[in-house]
Length: 115
Length: 113
Image (tube, rainbow over all chains, first blue to last red; front, side, top):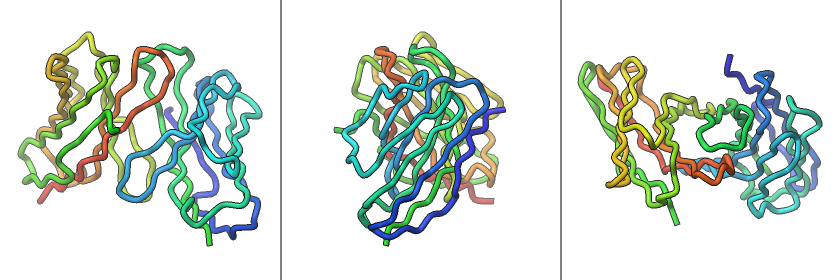
């Protein structure tokens, strides 16, 4: 089973709203990721959590706030977003270990539209 | 600067024929390479991977070839099926263990029945 579950699948929010994207995996993976993908572009890394600790933040604006409550859950809190933040947000996870070579498995993504 | 490049944005192939998707990279520290398939409105699905210690990995209809000296890899799909029509992303990760994937820009494969 290589399932990463994301909710909601679609989200429309205003620029003053506060919302959250949620991600869950039960594969025992200890690394979890948020990627952002704009149309006709490759996924771009935003955050990496390793063993529930934030290990990589790719200079993401503070209006995006990640949270890893436990080893199975990953949230992305959204506040005061801009229309250009509209994109597909992908959660992913990979097996334990820091060694390169771990396959990263993606969820189906959450489509975010900021109006 | 794009460290992983897929220079063909699209490819059309007749059903039953071979599809060859190409990928080039610039970072010599990359040691693990993956191919993902993506349908519209879905997340990327892992297809096949290869470690830098190998030059070929095969899984059913899918074979990935790695030429380290040329910093080039390719994905062969044979025989191609209409259900293979999707965008294919090449990705690479480096020996520093940061678990970060660098993606190419993708190639849209269309398999014509």
